[in-house]
Image 1 (cartoon, rainbow, N blue to C red):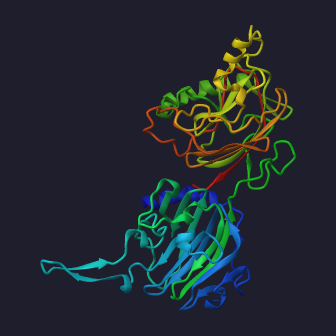
Image 2: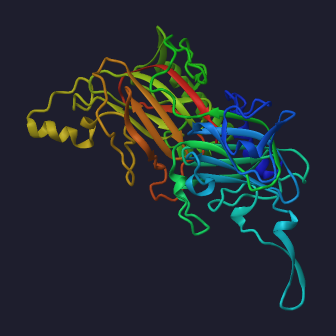
Amino acid sequence: VDAQVAAAENALRVLQGAAWQALFNGRDLTGWTGDVKGYAAENGVLVCNKGGKNLYTEKQYSDFALQFDFRLEESGNNGIGIRVPMNGHPSQDGMEIQILDHDGRLYNGEAVMANGEKKQLSWLKPWQYHGSVYGLVPARTGYLKPVGEWNTQTIIVIEDHIMVILNGALIVDAFIEDLPPLDGSAHPGRKNRTGHLVLAGHDDRVEFRNLQVADYSPSPTKPASSELNSAPAGFAAIFNGTGLEGWKGLAHENANERRRLQGDALQVAQAKADEQMRAHWSVADGVLTYDGKGQSLCTAQDYGDFELYVDWKIPAGADSGIYLRGTPQIQIWDPWDPRNKPGAADPANSLEWVSQYSNGRNLGSGGLWNNRRWRNAPTQLADRKPGEWNTFLIRMVGDKVTIWLNDKLVVDRVRLENYWDRDGIEPLPRADQIELQHHGSELYFRNLFVRELPW
């Protein structure tokens, strides 16, 4: 299998469950504005006629997947503007994904070298080829079908992550915030968080069909479903409310060592961990319950980019956390009581009381506690008192995490550092298990729902 086709498989798998909405009704330009005279609906096809310019969606889109077919004439040129303000320039005021017959005669020709040798050359820069984020990210080439044939393309834009999949092959996979522009322009539009989609006409006839969009904007801070352990639309329950199906024990406390386990060694370690899991994790009245005496609980499935709802409850003085991709952690603890463990004596004096808080417990739950280079504390105290239920909405895109606790934003797109490589050389794994952390405390969880984001 072609490497770029294999690289696209996961995103396309996630998109199979997407809630697609049509952008073009096949009959007219309802839902579009701008150069409506330069475009026409012909037999279910949206055509940019010769001389056509920019056609904007009436709606704005923030995080989304866009899927469509297109067909080019020789040297044909168009583009897909993303997060563009109304009447803005697609590649500068937003970002533009190239739609281009880059093999066309207009962009290629014969040149005579100094030694008299003739060579076929392209006049295009790498960031001008089809599928490129214009001026920002060059696309891989070799996947565009010949002129006159229909191509299928998917553009995924979630936070600063952009993926372009052409005819089943991943040709762009980039995090825009981490990349400087390549063409010398400032490209201020790359910082936009929302805007219109644009068919960016360049005077050439280009045909589009089957245009559809799926919304991947952040979910509400509380699940829409009120039924216990019943997932809201678009989410899947990873705890069924009756048993430990879909979960496994922690095969090794060190994630690097766990990932090295293979064959019989992995089977033996996992069997032992699962036995310990069943001894200390249980379900009572639809609540996932931990007695504090075993080890962390792990999802059997790995997750890359996702949203996660979690209801959690702890007793006074408790400590726990949620590992993302096997990496610590989103902190859970009792900010109201500085005692380190349930049943411990109260601090003897005010100085002792303050020293107990030196680890930041008083700041509340939700922070990325093990971060050292990036912020590790929550922005505000949002915890409810021990014995009361709390709700997380966790959103992870790339290595950046956003967290809402009880409807309050406590972490805003902060990088989660790879705890298992403190030298900062190895990035986070692109996917791994989610863990509910053992820290010697009784714990209670319910309503664990996940929505995979394409990555």
